[in-house]
Image (cartoon, rainbow, N blue to C red):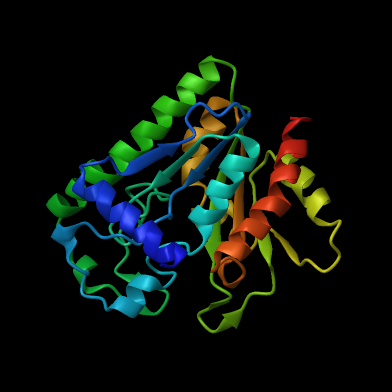
Length: 262
């Protein structure tokens, strides 16, 4: 069974067991880093069917961030850091967007129409917000608040992956670091990554906060006075367990070292 198959089996089991859309792993982790992975799963709860899409489309990057959960889990283990990740596909609702954002529930992802998201009425949108967005972010809020109160969190790190080609445009970076006005952690990690001259590093690439991708970090880090960092890894590099382990091992010491000076 592949990593993706195991992950999807985990998500299906979670859904069948009535588990919340947010799963917490290593809740007692002692690292000052709190990890979040919003696009961890391509699972669609049964009431959504396949949203009018085929299997290949639901395995593609439009449904999830391939490899991101494997990297996040590796980092959680290596850093002894808590991890909060989603168990539902971004196609139901994108947890890294404000509910009012036009792409919170997207009917067009890159060049793919999502029939099940076309012409949704306000009732259905509100239902998805209530069933997916609110419980996920409430769980992260409660967890982050408890750790902050205990003096355990200084940084919130969101783990993502990106497709090598988007709308026909090749993306040259192996990794991108996304940050806002507080660039301290991003610059610390960048300095470590630059020890490998073969790496092409994107700073606020392939996205920046102006693209509305900073919602989770705004809500859970910036508003609490914690340091935010979003990490984007090109997904062809982390499709396999070996690739995910390689990037976890590469990033863990940099995140650990970088957090010490925050």
